[in-house]
Image 1 (cartoon, rainbow, N blue to C red):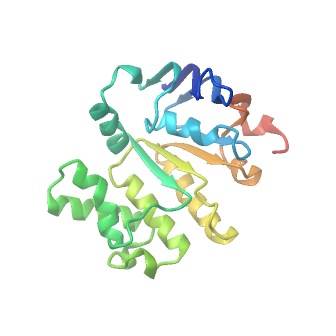
Image 2 (image 1 turned 45 degrees about the vertical axis):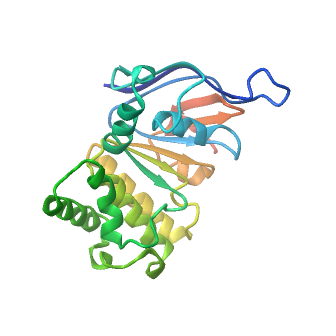
Length: 233
């Protein structure tokens, strides 16, 4: 079942000027519910811009974006914020945890925005931490945790709302290979439970763990195929 559909999407900065940049240049793609997709490309290729569009962090300059058959262009800023909070969980390379808050307080944040009562909120956040084996660090602040532990807390925050889509932008980029592999294991487990995973990476080895691989270059999709057909990345 189609969950995401982009039709001829452009994201243009400084349009019509000498320094015009086409971060996305006529991108069309669809992603089915429950897929595990890797978007691979070099720095500046447009892959993070694509994630920002898909995650409703940004809007296209031109083109259409349908999320679960709903035209994103028709949504208000409040409705877009609701999608970001409830429908999409984000995981970033830099973790984006709030330093002053404990692990469980960081995980509770999106639940606060959903006005979930305190008791239920705590239980949901603790459940998310348990799923990434971080319940024993619930009362620790980010500076008391390793990079891998912080990333697992970030994943817990992303899944606490039970969002059907997880978008992970270079989630292993700041981690050593062993810790990065553990993070990927968590993403694959979430996928096996039905979550749609969109993984942004520049690393061919990481991309090759996905079911489907999309390569982007200069704002254009130049490859979109199952892993088995992708060849060397």
